[in-house]
Length: 178
Image (cartoon, rainbow, N blue to C red; front, side, top):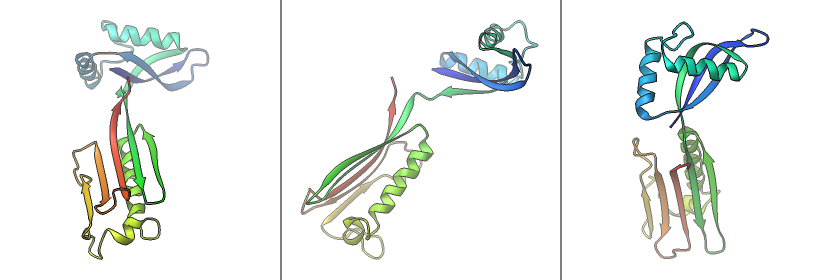
């Protein structure tokens, strides 16, 4: 994993106070160790006996900063959230893909696409699949897990049982970046 240390310090030439980021590769155990040091307020320039402080000072100096202390530690995310919208009607079809680093932004887009699909003015689904109570009409199938608050991989699939060419598959998939 890559850890991002947000540091407070000074620009080397102007001595203007600033915040900057330093990225360091680390194991999960090191992340836990750094977190304990951070909680104990030991990730600062006055600590001289910790190797990590020396590394942060040297990396800061190399990047034209004078290190004061760490204000935040974060794990650099190595994944994206992909929205895959695979749709088809009797006369047209398409696949739309959207990528996000943030789950909340991806979830918002997923919900927006579902809402548009349920709009009778925008999609056949909104005018044919659901009755006035929101229940699925005969001849159609809805399979989804969008109510699962713990899931990061979500799906919302609607199929016309009498014509497989009429479908709407919307998936939110977490993909690791390698």
